[in-house]
Image 1 (tube, rainbow, N blue to C red):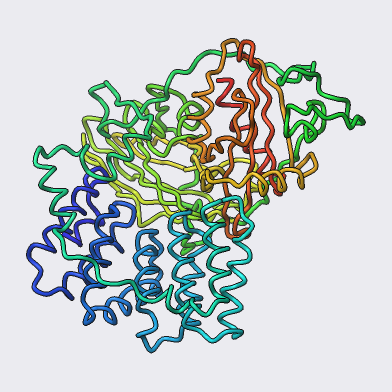
Image 2 (cartoon, rainbow, N blue to C red):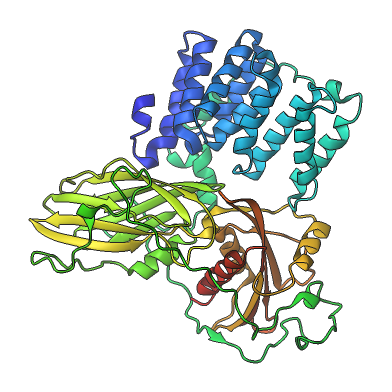
Length: 572
């Protein structure tokens, strides 16, 4: 089952993961065997593993001293081997924080191994890693190199916008200097013996419906995907582009203050006392942030692990036997727009082939699964997929594309991506070639890989920290603003939904005006660990048809791309 898991259909992986975990517990030959199997399961299944699975591992390891060294060695080895799934980092942080001192491995090496994965983790996982750092610090020599490195992280995270992480870092930093630290941060006591939550989950799941799976409940609560009604859908429910309210996106020459008073001229220092951010307005006619041009990359060579257009896939528009596939059910622009705020849907569809996409992004990394469905009554042959290299993203296609897709069947292709920076002027493209009855069909498809995919929402925002950072960004090109008019009013709930879809955390209570929405996210890439992106959208309280959006970050390209993304979807 573990071997099959890596090739199983995306939709059944979570259920398969849960059943593997339960079978392992019910029929374990020993507890050590069980721990090894579950850690391998976490390593292979990644995001499909619910929290109940790794909670159970922690409970068993904590309650059995004979397993503690073995489990710590196991998770340490998996991190060294390159396991980057967030669930593995969670369980590794807990076990190494509690029992890492039992290993012969130096605490400095363990610290650096966790730190390497720390920056790309989500907020919840970062909290667990910070706790592991605190445990390591409590066992280290005061004033040493290790203590200084850990305290440096605590100091840095003591001033970030995420209030929960900020509080945790500050408390650990203060506690580290007190004599009670080793006692407070001692190993956790044994858990009370109780029935496995996994078994309870299955007993409550006797109706067999997939909707009761833990991760499915979460996804259904947040997903806006709608099933396709057409019988030709080979992907079983990938969403078509949703119809949105028609609106006219017109630039407004008169910079109307949406808070009830006129925007002051650039030379004025007047401040609206009812608007906490009014003095930081950026006038509509100021120059917009220039987006750095994508640098030309050399042609890919044979063996380039990050893909590229190899000579034998060059798109040929002059071939005498070429087909001209007709798009079905939408346009490339519509599908791209839909997937820019969703991780699940149709990427491409013609009369012969449908490509669906499901994606997951964590930190600066992401993984996409492409589902190639043959709608034709005959085979699709000589299928080739290539993604030319770009300067802003490192992209790797996981294995060769199946050469033949039989009639009415589906093939899967995995694509891994890592964000290098936010400077790309255009998204990467997928070059597709396939043959129908010996005739060549080809397409160039934009991939929904944009900077916002690498956002981590920040919701617990400390007001003082937020306003300090907001005011520290003076104006264009790092703080950009635009006013738009729509034909229909925009509900506040629609803005909340859009912010969450983009990856912005809605910061409640920061703006006293209920018609204004503030969003915050952390952008992570290979060249920058955590760039804060702040957005403020002000709706006209009278009709809600006019709005002003302001985006601030320390990266001009990031500010510009985020503003354009929001405008595109608000005025669609």
